[in-house]
Length: 288
Ligand code: C2E
Ligand code: MG
Ligand code: MG
Ligand code: MG
Image (cartoon, rainbow, N blue to C red; front, top):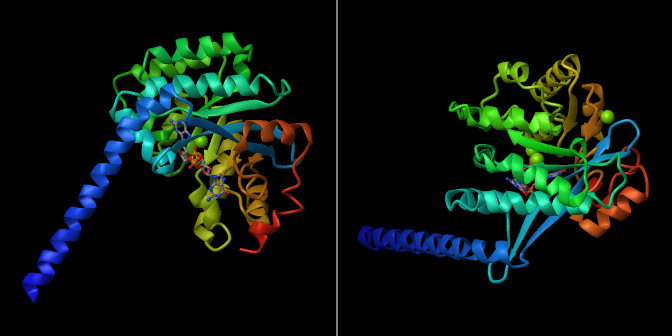
């Protein structure tokens, strides 16, 4: 009996490994095709002024619809693209497409894109950024690059040089998922980030945990004293919005205001004026 169980266990272990291998293989071969074909898409999520509800920026979020596997989350395919050396091409595509879309918006609305640590080591990045801006006519100050704390693990000096080059061009820099990575307050001193985005795990906890509230408040006052904008990510409820306001955040982003939407919808949303997340939560979310 014990033997039978062991065999079953090892059989299912092998099967799941095989399945994972097959999926990885499908993703790897699919990525090259996706980059040259029309399988990649950008969605846009509004980043809203906390007081007025005005859309100040929209974050571009990459989507991939695999013809067989269906939608694959960026958290799965981006690390694979990095390993395959495809991240440059992918970042280039995102930059270009995001600027194309943002070129249709009013001048005061910025576009934010996520840049993975591998891209920030590439000397090609500043040139790709300049090309995307020139080709679309978007001004540098309307483009914000979101980077995570893990970029500071690179001690070769490459990332440092590229970040400074990007700032010289006039781009805005945001520190994304703040508080979850290799946070060192020294980084806030040596780079002048324009925006701090507090990780959504803290906002998820503010209603229930005094600890999360304390952390969010501390980050809010630190950022204010350093004259940085602050975005509370992952705002889903009116209660969370209240905590973001209490902590002195300047901006909010989350399902309470809008999910990420396609390019044509975000243009309509911007044209329609301030979002009403403050007073009128999406009923679908309120009832959760
Ligand atoms: P991120 O930059 O922190 O993006 C925020 C994520 O939270 C997005 O997930 C967004 O859809 C989700 N989100 C927004 N509001 C809410 C909310 O109220 N509740 C909840 N539960 N989630 C919310 P997504 O699109 O799956 O992206 C995941 C991560 O993948 C991003 O985290 C970013 O690190 C990465 N990513 C996305 N697009 C790109 C890209 O073009 N390039 C690179 N390098 N990374 C990307
Ligand atoms: Mg503002
Ligand atoms: Mg982001
Ligand atoms: Mg984030």
